[in-house]
Length: 610
Image (spheres, rainbow, N blue to C red):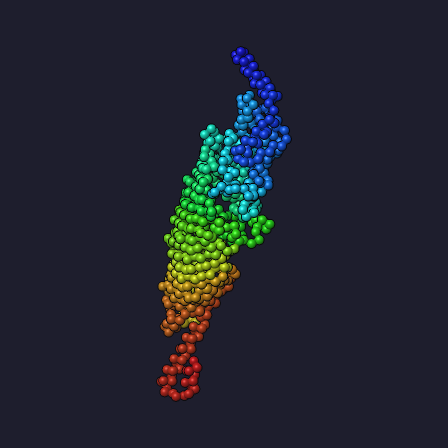
């Protein structure tokens, strides 16, 4: 045992002495020009190392540098800049004065993906057919380092529209083997407009044919998006997928996607090309898609304080655009197709099932060939188009609804759920904007509607009229039995919407005990209603036969008006009773005149006046 320890100590001394001798005999600055030359030959980029290079022995033999920059040909700013860089090198090649780098580590680096850091082709430089100047430079680029580590760094990405995104706290660890199979671990944080996205990525890549082809398996992608105008708990989840890139065709594909966000799940495939006008093909399926959870809605009341309480708070004014327009809408830049099948969809407190979307977009116009689903025992179909070519979104829809609970729809659109029943509707609507607020203010159109098993909460037309008649005339009264319900079995009519004013031209309703017809209007933005009905109670009367017969045939005017929170009603029973008294008086005077054969002109004049 003593001999083994002695041998081990001698070995350690020899290694340490050899490394010290190597450090003394080999000057790392001798490799400065070699490293710059290798980088330029492999990528066309210029590597600049400022300051002396020095050795770092423990725990890994490394070369430390001062400030470094990596600049693309003709660029105004470097792509990568760092205050220091560490190169972990292999020991044996140094014995023959050769440099073999195992790992490159950058800490506190700044990576710029901006027009100023992009490669520029010199003026009047020849361009090979079918190539641009920048593609010639990067055509032969390969990543030839065993390991790369980037810690606590910053990525600056400037988009084509001039907007800049800063990706902070970038921590990257990339390694590859001799077969060019790479493993990537990445974490970062993006903050913008009082929102923050935190993500962690773990992936395996095949870079054997890069840049012509790249294949990657994203083992796990964890993310969380929090901040202003989002749910209080944010949007978070995980994702897995297979990624492929074909550089020659500028085509990509995402296969076997498994994504969850809060309590929603998505799976499927996405593919596309980036040449010319980008093309996108999306085919996804969702067992559950909860839009209320993703948007921070509470029971469908997104426009009120209740919905706002479900969110983390509105973005400050300084972080909001003065006026929204479609200049940066993806539909203006990308064409493609979307297929989405959702088993269960929740939107504004309403649960839908078997939802199917089949849409296509071309040059800023999205055609909804199919948007259908079921809700309870009913169904809906919502074909139409969405046009984002102008500053404001133009929408045209042709809804068809069959037997859907109207109370749930009213609640979803932030309207008072004072009406229940099964709604069927067929119409044509156009407008500006896709929000519920826009629907209430800037949409136009018309529809024919039918409401079965209808019931108006708090209003019993039969009892209202019968009680009013009883108070005005003791000769008749209404029956107080189970038949006196406020069930309006069926309502039919037409409706017209014009910039927030909903007009009912002709409504007709019937039940076993009454018939009615009405017309009026509802002001959606101001939440006001003014509707007049003519209600005829056909059953449930007792008393004077003549008066009962009159009441069974005469509509009683009923006006419902005022704000939704405190509706008023006006019932004009006196007109019906006054007419009945006039007709009865006229009849009795005529009978008296006939019996007495009177030709008195004053009597005839009185009968005529009545």
